[in-house]
Amino acid sequence: MANKQILLTQQALDELKEEFRRLNDVERPDVIQQLALARSQGDLSENADYSAARDRQAQIESRIHELENIFQYAHVVAAGETNKVAISNEVTFTRLDDNSKHTVVVVGNIGADPTANPPAVSNESPLGAALLDHGVGDVCTVDGPHTYQVRIDSFRLN
Image: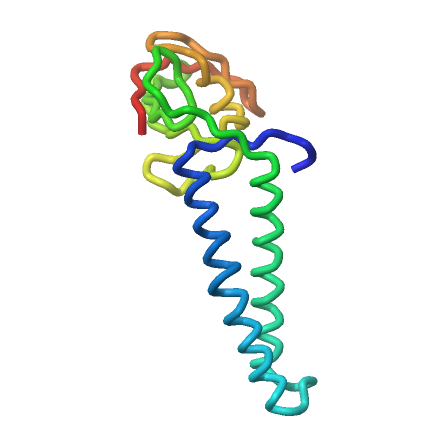
């Protein structure tokens, strides 16, 4: 995340702050307590509880560091109603090459989830970037490994 703005809605930022608080105030102290208990069991070389606690501690510290970086570069975008597709909009479009209809939610740099229903696509993905700042009826070119065009059928605040 080298000196790059990370676009988030206020809701997404609040959720990340809550995760950060939970990691700092609950999970970090809990894993420290687990480590102390595992150390008290003696030989650490074959102590599965100690190894598991160390692994969990590394995961927690890594995520805390990642969240701190996100907060450093976070930029909150308004999730307002406009006549152009924006972050947090659910967009229904038609692929013009096969006439198939699709619905996605455009999200900020983080938060993409292709398994969600509807899928959440990053504003930096080829599809997300193509949809942004276009209105209903606009034809957009998606520049990816296989370039294709889509027509925006509708969108709404998600």
